[in-house]
Length: 176
Image (tube, rainbow, N blue to C red; front, side, top):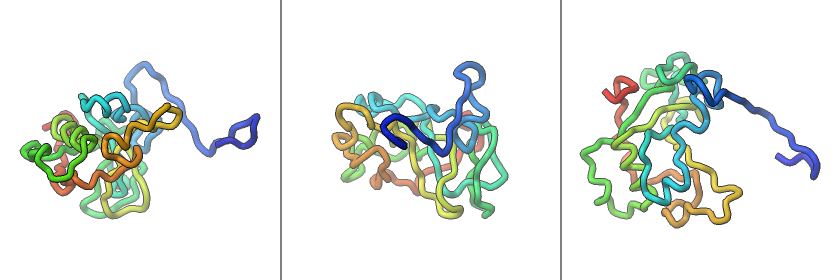
């Protein structure tokens, strides 16, 4: 944030090497770099996400994590917690294009979730529930906010037409 016209302040920051394994003490609770899995504006406007996404949830496990995570900031101890690093997939049998009212942005995300899935990379809020918060490139500083044209009011949108109850957790990070 801007403390004055001539200085900046922050309450937290991080850095990580852009060479090597790409994970460790990065900017997320799982140690996964902040940019990994982010849906970029150009990908969203082109309607093609050709990679796994990342998300945060308030249902992350307190002490359990799995590759590609190298740590956890989870708070939940219930039996159904999700380890950071876990990969989820939207049921590939769903005909996403036939969902009534689904926006073009939701279709793009849903197709990526069916094909590539998403990795849990961070904990958010208090433990328990299970809301999913997917990571999108923030349009701040861009000349035009592209998200309304995709059916999203902003870059952080709950995408209500995606059938979240049809997500499944894969046994391993590599899709099996």
